Length: 350
Ligand code: PMV
Image: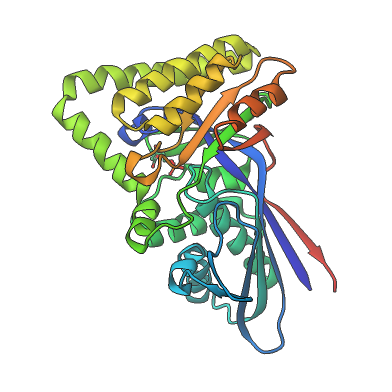
């Protein structure tokens, strides 16, 4: 038997960081997917094959005719820590006992604010549960399982990413609660990911990159504490932005939506989470005809090369032109659509 679980990437359209303080945020699923395939293995145990994750690669030392792996496997295995934890969690909670090959294929770049960790957790758990006859179609239970794995790896995690990977569509997050929004249309987005840092990065920086969201959230907290009166106004403005953005989307008012994205970008900049690399990409998109552009997710740190993702809203028929302009910076650029489908599980006899 072969099971394939496929889940989407997530993007926060409005309200990141402020959502940590109970304000509203709007997130959606992108048509950029991660697949986990589980099939039989006679020897028992778990064999894991990870293929083509963008921004994650093994660096090679080319000496003579032979290529020597340069990055040690301990470092490389950090990229699959969510899968290892998911297996451990399922062994403990549901008594699964191996005898499977797990193959992961992903188009979602790592550490880029596009929900690769949650996608890996949700798809691994769904595929293994189905393989071992534990899948009852309960998406709530799956989301909770995956959220538990994220918390075990990261210490804490917002429910946003696992909700989007599981349900797809759009979700509103408020005060830690997730509400699915069914009446919003799919729109085109151009994403630009700065992900040049992982090649040649040292072990300490790799750890820092993994903890980037935590560090940025801490930096924002420090700013909030230092200027609490000012922060409260900015956070209220962000909350109002999310509300107006939902109304604009509902009415297919894309120029209004773009303008709200530009305002949100200004608020994120005021928090200190927008390094030069991401700021330049936003400005370039805005000057190249985007209706709006902003950083999505936690943002970036200058000392880590500004790794992170920008989303830009193209005007009608202009997606490809905008993508070409953004690609000139060397960013990994994609033309994508929001409101993508959530978890899909397929079963194939072999
Ligand atoms: O960059 P990401 O995908 O880790 O998103 C972080 C979003 C924050 O609002 C900054 C933190 C959170 O837990 O919501």
